[in-house]
Amino acid sequence: MTLRHLSLAQFRSWPRLELELDDRPLAIFGPNGAGKTNILEALSMLSPGRGLRGAAPGDQARQGPDAGWRIRAQIGDRAVETGALPGESRSVTLDDKAATQVALGSLVRMIWLTPAMDRLWTDAPEQRRRFLDRLTLSFQPGHAESALTFDKAMRGRNRLLRDEVRDDRWYRALETQMAEAGAAMTANRLAALTRIAAAQQGAATSFPAARLALLPGEGFADDADAASIADRLAATRPRDMAAGRTLTGPHRADLGAWWGPQDMPAALSSTGEQKALLLSLILANARALAAERPVLLLDEVAAHLDAARRAALYDEITALPAQSILTGTGRELFDAFGPRARYLSVHREAAVSHAEETS
Image (spheres, rainbow, N blue to C red):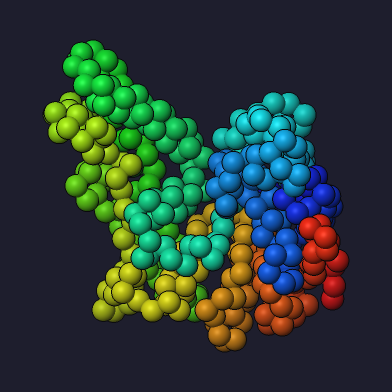
């Protein structure tokens, strides 16, 4: 479905914003702190989870945790609203009826890239897992439910381990839930990597294709068999009890990436090469979701890219069957788009953001 309208109320630096969207890429420019990323974050809240900043609802209200915020959008013929009242969790409605966040994942497929992700290949495994799960969620919205089920059961098991409970029945119930949800999580992740690999093969792109793999480490995180996961959890209880936490399972997964004829590990590549690899994966993700027409959010995307690479990126973005919203500090960063894009100038006065469409 196509995102046609965005309306913000009391979200971050925006007391109000009404933004019409169409099929053209939208380039948002302005100085640092003007409120550009806040627009992308608002758009990311039209998907399950905490958005591209991972923020709690109370931190997103313009007037602080004692105030609320609201986002409304028109996606195809569906009216979507999400927001949070003071002290409450985020709510979602579709066509004025209460809905779950998972329902958002089926309505619009959201892909994003932020400057913080530039450190992905050298950061802790947790960050790569988060990236992998966001990628997986774009293909399989139900992945969020599997991850929540696994996490809830694991937290229960960890409490038993810390309290040194030895009743086998308590463990079996939780470990069965973990095994079933964990097997689904791993199967979803592996399927997502397969789709990314297929989208990279033969693609007309100026960005290097990456070979991706789910790294199991010592946690057997590539195991998609529920029975073997349950057996392993039962067998490792003594070790886990000594550690006070669960040491095996999909929560220990890592994502590996290699590129080029030398099979260069992404972590050993230059800053520019790492950014190019990320862009390659984001573009492949969008190509693989062509039938769903994803929304692509690219924050400060021109960083570490020279003029030729920017032009190549904008050519590919324009050719994608996707809606693309980009941010940058200056209008000149988007000159290679020419008339193919729309341009929105953003500035901030007295802690309030303002926007004006320009040519």
